[in-house]
Length: 355
Image (cartoon, rainbow, N blue to C red; front, side, top):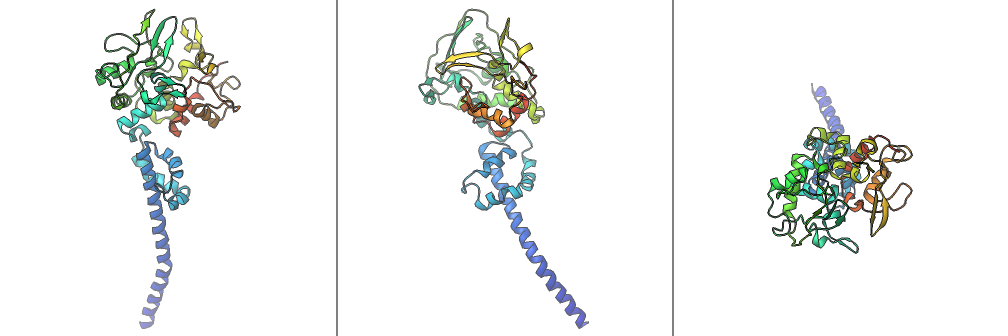
C-alpha cells in the first residue's frame, strides 16, 4: 500500500507540474482578453460607435486609453473580445449615444447643417457663429437665407417647442404656417427615425444662443418640399440593421441625390436620372458639376473601389487623385463613423446605372 501511495503522490506532483503552468497561461490570456474587451467598451461609450468601429479606433489610441499589452494582443484576441462585448451592442451605433451626442453627430457630420446654416468666412464656416444663419440662395423661384437655428428666442428657434421643430423637419412647415423653400431638404427627412428626431431637437437646444437676424424669405411662387427617391415613413430599428438600408437612410439625411440628380422638365428628374449628376454649382470655389454616383461602369462608380468612394466622400479626392470642389461638405462627412461610410458605399452600389 505504501508503494501505491507513493505512486499516487508522484502522479499528483506530475499532474500539478503540468496543469499549473497551463492554468497560469489561461489566466494571463483571460485577463488580456478582459483588458481588450474593457478597452473596446471604453471606446464604444466615449466615441459613440459600434463594436466594429471601436476596433479601428482602439488600435490607434494612445497607451493612456489602450494599454501597450492590449494593443499588441488586440488582433489575436479580437474575435473573442468582440464575442464578449457584442451582446451588449447589437443595436445600431446610434443607440450607444446620448440624444445630444447623436444629434451633434447628425448635425455636424451626416446632415452637414453647417454647410448652409453657419456664416462663411474667408477660410470656410465661421464656427464662432455656428448655426446662426448662413448662405443666401437667389433663384427665379425664391430668395432665401439659411435660418438661425440656435435657441435664441428673438432671432432663432428658441420659442419653438420640440414638436414644432420635429414637425418642421419632416413637413417643411414653420410654426407660423410659412413653408420653407425646397433648398432646405425637409422632403428628404421623411424617413428619419423618431429617436433621431428627438436627438436633433435635443442637440439644437444645447447649442450656443446667437442673436443674428436673417432676411425674411422672398417667395415668387408657391413652395412645396422636394420629396426625392426612396421616400416613405420612418425607417424601423430592425431595418436599420441592414447596411444597405442604413446607407439609404444616411444618403436621404445627407440629401446626396438632391445635388447628384439633374433637372428635368418639371424639376429634378428622379424618375429617369437619379444619381446621374450634372448639376452645376457656382461659388468662391469657381464652378463644379455634381458627379454621376450610380453603379454605371464607366460614367458612374462601377469601377471605383469601396475605399476610393469612401475617400471621395470624406476627403474630397477623386479616383484619379484630383481635389474635388465644393459645395459637397467633405470636412463634415469626414466625421462619420467608418461603418456609416461603408453603409453609404453599399447603398450607392445599388443605384441603377445611368449614363
